[in-house]
Length: 118
Picture 1 (tube, rainbow, N blue to C red):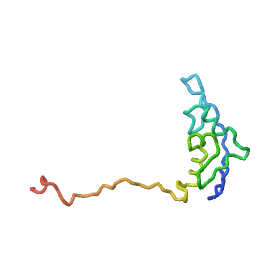
Picture 2 (cartoon, rainbow, N blue to C red):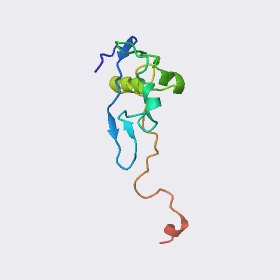
Picture 3 (tube, one colour):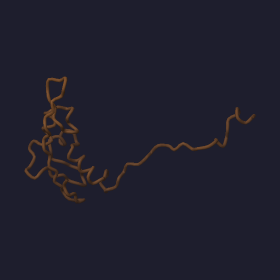
Picture 4 (tube, rainbow, N blue to C red):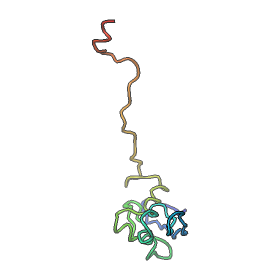
């Protein structure tokens, strides 16, 4: 697990997963969580051209120089870094919160005419 310091470039190393034989199919898939369903060419983009130390990721900007990030704007390295730091926005705050409406309990204060005649 890499050491993450806020406001500094952090290095995350990516390695290819083992090939898994999928029963019923005549091919195998790589065991990489995000790109396993996309095929080997996309999953290869995550580690091809990687420096020996790993990908240098800018923590505040959530930017990665891998080919997958340059093509899609998101990659497993940045998602892993977000999971480790527990932050979502650039200020380091968790910006996810519950927006659902809470249902009030009990009898409504203004009942309809069907209930007022009883």
